[in-house]
Length: 338
Image 1 (cartoon, one colour):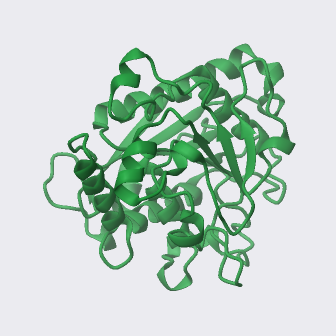
Image 2 (cartoon, helix red, strand yellow; image 1 turned 60 degrees about the vertical axis):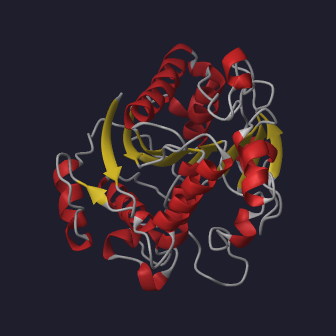
């Protein structure tokens, strides 16, 4: 499973390897074209953004582990994923950003404020960069012959994958891409009237998102607009896991933001009704009925519990998502995108 790493600085700008200066925005497309070479044999493209307290090496290991587990499941249990009969060969872009702080309420607020500043319009550039990156990936992937139904087995599918604050970055990027005044030319796929790009991101999966439960009403209202605003370029479901054992988005989030987070309690109010379900075992297939919703709340409390060390740590089970069942969910989304 191949991966490419993109590094963001504290303002959300891309930094080239070995350089202290960020890439100018007007040269971002040139930089991406030089650094990213999407292999033709890849079937599924992933954009992975990590969360709180994660070093770049750990982010790469997480993305690699998840997709390797998914690839192994596809090879050993093809009966569970009939949509992948033509093969499953993932390729990933891992986005790394400065996420370290003390494991305290003030440290949590510091990274929360940094994540918001990096992605907020007018101050940070993360949403612009990630939106541009998504546009580049979509513009250069091999398109299915019949994108209206996403049924052609030769196409490449585009998925979002995140953890913790990484989910905020991804939501900011997709929301940003829906705003016509800010849309760069490379994001032509997000224009629903453009016959060349009538489809967009095929699925989004965020493990233990660090954001208030009502974020889709307040912070990300353009993701699921109900007032005539342009639709965000997210055609597939947004799937979010939660676990009551997640202390980072439970106890710490409650102290920092006066409310529990999505990773602890799931999505609350939203412009579209969240569909509740539970994380399934490897012996239970996900059906289209289960995942074919705009927002899906997945209760993973039975699996994301943390070991003995995690239960004593300040974050609890916040990072306890490295399980085969997580890969099962990820792979099921890929299969049902066909």
